Image 1: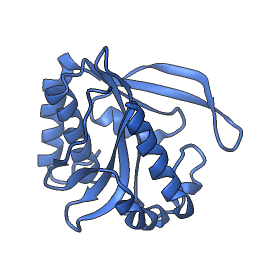
Image 2: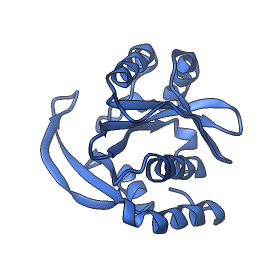
Image 3: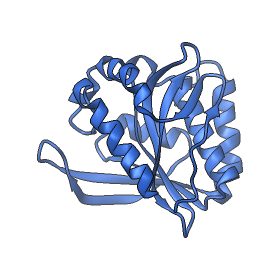
Image 4: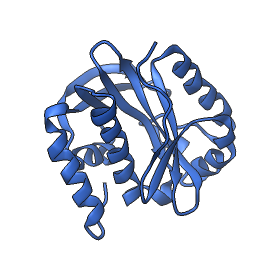
Length: 200
């Protein structure tokens, strides 16, 4: 049984709520903003596949390997994306923050910065994690810049790590933040939120 339990996390710009099928309609609308499912280097469900994707994440939650969230825009109280704690290692208290996507209109805004602060704070201060990982396609430069901006350090690149839906091979860039770095990362994220026009 995973030591990670469903939790509600809330900030000024964003809230994270345990994912349910009640979020499906808003998430279908969100994925249409920018046609995110057409991005070849990531895996984002289209509107027709949203119910199945939510069910997939909830099944992994039951297995203890994932805790999925709906990302809520605090201004509108609507779901604008998804994120998860995944690859849960209860013995070593390590997790990955991943399977994250946001509708185009809220990308590169303070909402993303605050989501990362909420997730990392809970991971290090409530779950007592020793490390939090982030993984992304080596060619997903937008994602890599965002991870590096919040303080993630590159551990390495897993070459030919997986096969993408279009048949290409994915090199996966692996980043992490460790518990000893958290006080500095926390201060940095709070500074980004307090600084006008600061985004991650």
